[in-house]
Length: 367
Image 1 (spheres, rainbow, N blue to C red):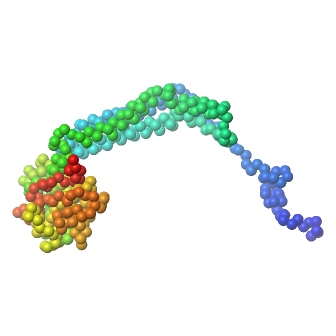
Image 2: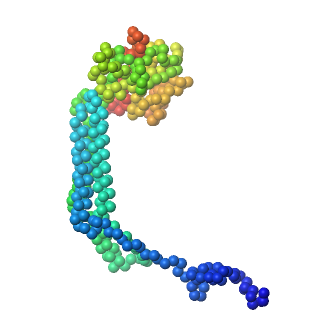
Image 3: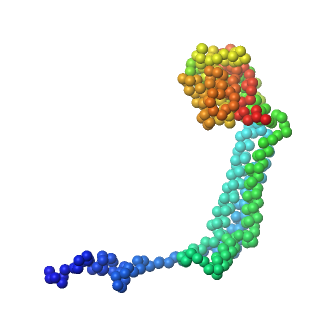
């Protein structure tokens, strides 16, 4: 190869169509500087919605959206009606009250969301806009232009004073929905003494002679079914209609039965204290205590067999089963209420009477 065929130092030979620096020829400008790397393809033609070009379609969409907001108002009205319609805690009213309140709340909140989505999809601006970059500093003319554009965009989006029907029904729906949070505050006060928390918590489904039944099978238990160190969860037994025991549970509501959840455990002789005022409340070391924590009502469901401690998983309140469930740790304010138990003629564990103190949270004790 002759001397004039040798590339200069620091240069590279490459395939045809490339500049000496190895860049594609299409990227190289005159003088060796880089040229434009791509061409702006632009945006595809915008497809207008029917509501953009047809005033009748826009009016029809406006009525549909307003109907959603009116349906939300009806849902709120149904919520309020269900709140006052069911006499709690009688019979099966808790179930129907919960279904009614939940269903009406769903209708009220879902309709607001559905109406807002339809508003955004059918009536709010749908144009694609490309905004070029400009220097950060804005002139007074630019500021005025932006303000004018914002006003025009607001008008196009249906803000006041346009779309008065939508705005009116939306305001009514949101205002009515707020009542679902305000109306239940009624329960914070009452004039009826029997409706106060301490009286509602003082009564459960336990009656003299009602058997202790496993939760959730409903099978009555005998003393020999519980070994030393064992613990079971029980509820009042609900007998089939027509049996003699049926007389004990005819007037028991589901709410009273739910408050009657109990933990039954068995301790060995000498492992527990004996108090004169609780004499005869247990049966051969078998104790029954309310399962509802005296802090905020969480279920006490953890039992440490070696320490004989019952623990509430919510806030770690700890109760000593060897000392009548005295509080030894955590925020609970008082021991778990004890249920006095005995055995019937067939050997089944039964309640002697209802709890002697209210079950559950102790907030009602604070004046």
